[in-house]
Image 1 (cartoon, one colour):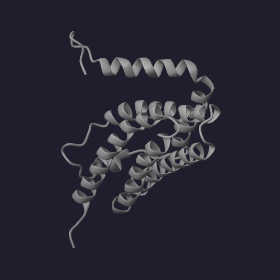
Image 2: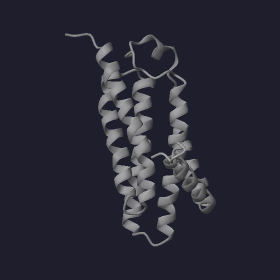
Image 3: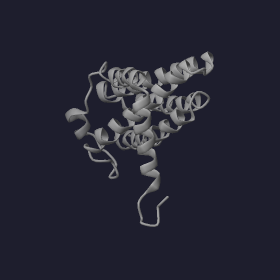
Image 4: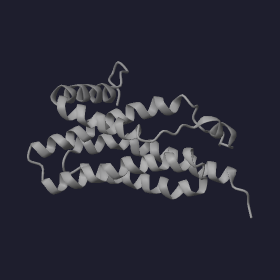
Length: 181
C-alpha cells in the first residue's frame, strides 16, 4: 500500500499503532518483554564453529540477519503478549486468555528446545519434529490470541513467516548433511 508520493502507508500505520500501544501498556509491556526475552536467556547455546562447518544451502541468510530479524520479532511478540494480558484486565474471557497465554508459553519453550537440539546437541534430524511443533505453536499462538486481541494475533504473523523460512532452512540443512544409506 503506497501513497501517491510513494511512501509506504502500511509501515507508517503499523509503527503509529505500535507506538500508541506502547504508551497505553507500560506495565503489561514491561512484564511481557521480560518474559519473551527472559525465556530465551534460559538456554545458552550459540551457533559457534559447528554451524559454520556444516553444509548450508546457498540461500542461507547471512549470520547478521538472524538477530536483525529476531529482535524486532521478539518485540512484536512482547507487544502481542501485553495486549493479551491487557485483554484479561478489560473483560476478555478468562478461559480464552488462559489458553492464549498457555499456547504462547509452549511456543517459547519449543523455540528454546529447538535451539538446544539443533545448536546445542547438533542433532539435525531430531530437530525437525521440534521445528514442526514450534511452527504449529506459533500458528497456535496467533489463533489463540485472536479471540482476545486481533492486533495481538496479527503481530504474531511475521514470526510465523520467519519460522516458515527457518523450517525450510532446517529441512535443507538436514538434507545436505545426511549421508544416504
